[in-house]
Image (cartoon, rainbow, N blue to C red; front, side, top):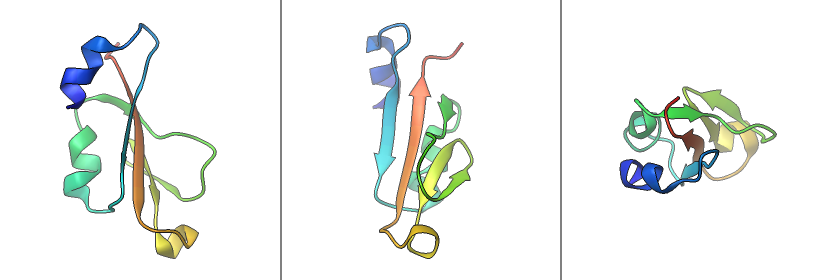
Length: 72
């Protein structure tokens, strides 16, 4: 889905990949190979090219967020 969305972006557009899980198969491994980066200004910690929110870090449910833009 990410690969299909990227060509549809405006020049400075972003895809926000956000999932309610902390398992690498559904988080960091999915965004590998894309021009991805973690968002700022959130509680939690950087995890590869994304941001991890987890019960032991933020007292929230587990969540992963990554911002993906077209490769530059």
